[in-house]
Image 1 (tube, one colour):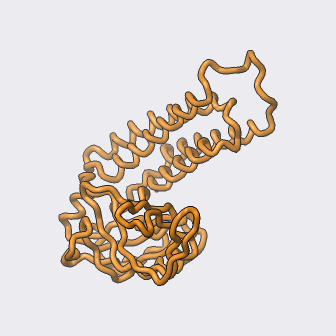
Image 2: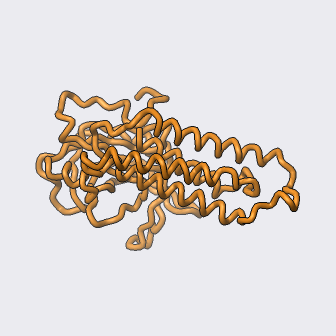
Image 3: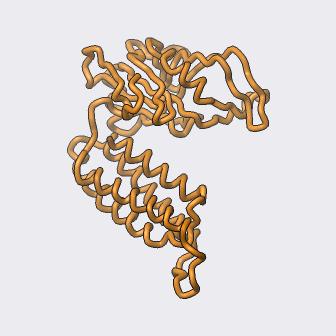
Length: 273
């Protein structure tokens, strides 16, 4: 893998038809919750373990909703741990019917199956050591343990240009505004906006949600509606982000909520690339 590459730029398609391939974010560093496993109800995935396990998914079978038998004719073509995104990514080859389900939005999430050699118990949960990912399943009507594990079309859906540029500029403005707050004194009484900081957080959460909806429309919408979806998404997302930025004067720069929302915006933008 070439460090510094954007998501999936490391992929080698091996000459296979792109219209039968899907991109997967198979596993991130987010913990997963397993109430059915009293010994390990919270499972932790360290970067070092995912980095080592990233390529173990290559050549493995692909299933559906963790059913006993994998999908006939489906296989993981390539997999790798992305250092920038902190996630295991994969390219899978599947029958055309599953491509259609992804286009329609019926399938958008995935989940891995794995084994491990050892477990380190911590106060936060169980750290799995010696991970070996031996299968990945697409999910239909089910939610993954890792909420960021996702499925998308392989063919490029990137709409570079004004949409991408405007969104990125908006995020950059937001980051600058948050950084400026660190250097500011507490706001004077006549500078206090009508809304509370909690209201501003809510405004940005709505902007994040709208961006995520635009991503979903762009990735799974029908060809005839995709262009209109991008147009609508661009206008409303940029407007909502720009509206939220000027009202962040009372939000401290080290506020973890604000920082999380900025990261959510970054993640949404990367999915559009």
